[in-house]
Amino acid sequence: MNSAIDPTRVAELNVREEAAYMATRPKGIAMWERAKRSMPNGVPMSWLRNSYQPVPMFVAEGAGSRFRDVDGHEYVDFNIADMSMFTGYAPKPVVLAVSRAVVAGSQFMLPNEDSIWVAEELQRRYGLPKWQFTLSATGANTEAIRVARTATGRERVLFFDGHYHGHFDEALVTLSDGVLVADEEGLPQDVTSRSVIAPFNDVEALIRMLADRSIAAVVTEPALTNNVGLVMPDSGFHAVLRTATREAGTLLIIDETHTQVVGPGGLSARWGLEPDFVTIGKSIAAGIPLGAYGMTEQVAEVLERPAGRDDPKALVATGGTLFGNPLSMAAAKAAMGEVLTPAAYKTSQDHGAQLADGFTRLVGAAGLPWSVHRFWPRSGLSFTSELPRSGAAALAAIDVPLRRLSRVYLANRGVWDAIVGAGPTCSVATTDADVDQYLGAFAELLTELHR
Image (cartoon, rainbow, N blue to C red; front, side, top):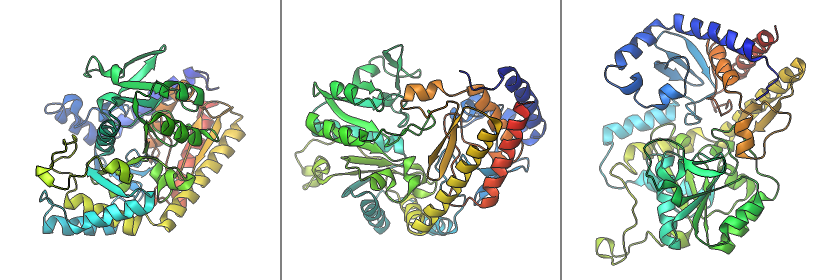
């Protein structure tokens, strides 16, 4: 796509910046070579090779808004572990709570009082009365879909084009030339038979796809935020979505895993949404593994078993040995009770606005036909004159070589930017100086691109 930047210049700068990056990280590269002998690609998870160029970074420690790699380079972090460290690194209340939980016993496969507090707080924030816990948002979405299938007696699930809701079978499908295909290898051959994809913001297509009453659930972020930059809903879209799903007997699952950063209760609270489920993960417990899903009373009835093991009702396929463990519960109680406060959200939003103001100023001074999005603590760029309205348009607008150059260029100047397809996000620990450092490095990049 045309981002108004010479691709030859982008390639030249990328060669220089990647060489500089590798030359100044000998310890990290040595660790990577060692790791290749025990892990595929030399990393514990394939994303750590696929998402970061030119080589995986090995990290040493983090505190507040910054972390340090094994070669001693410090970075102000605007990726915040793909939104999972919105609390900042090592927030003291969470450190203390987790330490106490480890001493008291990190796992019993039994409930404790903290689990009640966390469920009550999620109830208060999101307005849904009943909650269950997993270890990730992927797990939360997986179980919510299973509950929805049980409640509706239907199998298929509708997602929107450009979605990402975790690495489970039904969600790893995409449209290719109008045909639904598996997004990655290793999925069942019939995976596309259980999923449907509609264009985001296309209410006519949505209503048409729901008309045959075969869809168990619609799963969506309230605004698409992951892998496609940012796609905001049109005015009235959510009202139509809620009405259409109710009329079709389809349950609505709102995934707040990324959008929770806009404030307590995420966009569900901010926009007054009325989903049947909310799913969440990542920063809910300051990066300690935890996912959760909330339900209406009516939906939760599917899981109720008054007679316990002896209840004649069939079991729904939910649960896991480590789900609801005391360590995760302690982390979530401390994170939501003491770190993710209204004042902390306000500070992150102020810094997000500062970042967006800086982008607007720099892009305007450079005469570039790019648009800037504003999403409370998050900002970012689309290499288009108007912000995209669909996942397909957003994906087409991503200039991957330019995004990769930007990430390594900023890393060489002490700024860890968001992954390709996302946007920089200010955590509750971000400072004015952090925002200034990001914008200063980005201004240098724009200057070099125009030479």
